[in-house]
Length: 530
Image (tube, rainbow, N blue to C red; front, side, top):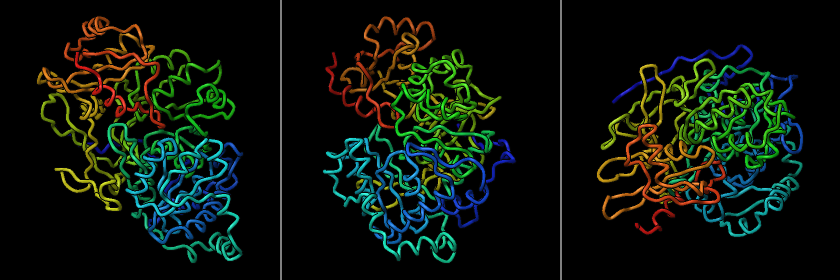
């Protein structure tokens, strides 16, 4: 089955302008935004206070001068910092002087960080002594193989020549800074590793700026909006939608240090008068658990992504807060947003329609009857992968459809109106007794039987049936007969009923809020067959 979409969405609201020059980097876009929105409230609010766009331009140039001493042009600098304005300054400053920031997941552990640094050939890591102490990362940074530099020391090391350079770059950027190239790498992010080893994803300035414009064409927002973002900026959803989008388009951006502070975040949303919230289904569920009356009263848009939005979470937000969550979809490799539901055309059970300028095809997959593997191309697609097995070697996206196409690995169905319905990842199908069964169906059964709990399915080898399905759940009283009853009620075939059910106090999660399917797969394989 083939389907091609170049969706027609809304034009940009009059109050929003995002039209950087052809050679624009993120720094050029930030500088333009500081001029366009001068005098208006906005910028970034973080744990240390408010940072306006003009101040962030200065901070970015300071970071640019610092990284110039750490790596040559084209060199990669690791950023190991929390959700604060300075982290964005470091990221944007790298691009201003032709260095490439690699955003490191400080919750991944030293082994994963070392693997990421090898894949991207990171020359130096910038972190903060205060952050390392507060986050108790001492044991982690002690085992890092790449040279580590504390930002506190680097700032003190700036001399008179550096300060004169920063002042000159602020006044005459065209003469002091190298010419921008929007096709050059703007950032290296790393896939979550939920189903395998993390890979470096190289995103260009063009890809990030294009995706911001695509999001704006779908969601009708203006400069009066304020985005509350607790998603980490080392994750594409948190970086592009949660931080760069408001920063470059005149909105306020409230950065918070962790999405896991479930008790504090609802009150902070009310206190900051945020109007837009991005989150995962898991995070939104926990925020609802701890919200008090009025905490979400200022929210006008709530967008869920990074994992499937459950019916229980959707219905609860509608019932308790009068908010219709808009489910979207994307991948790190697509900067990240590919599709999103919009107000007035929100179709539950789908992730909306593909954004402007994105072509998509559902390519048939052997053994799967309905839908196909979604392959896409567009201006927001990554430049390529950096794999640990081939450090520093860029692997551009390509599929059987040709160069520039990216295979998402997700099995989708696209209806006549262009709405995308995701059946599950191709890797998350089990071949049971010769038939392909989506693990998402097994999870649907569990959610139907115990909607108040969390569930995740994994596959494991089976000598008799090829593969078996193992369900991990926080519902200690869930049994196979409950799932069989649910299968009868919602019309799901019996092959989707898990062979084994394992009760856990909590499901393992990655720092991005996604379920750690890789850990569950290892647990499933370790279980005896009977």
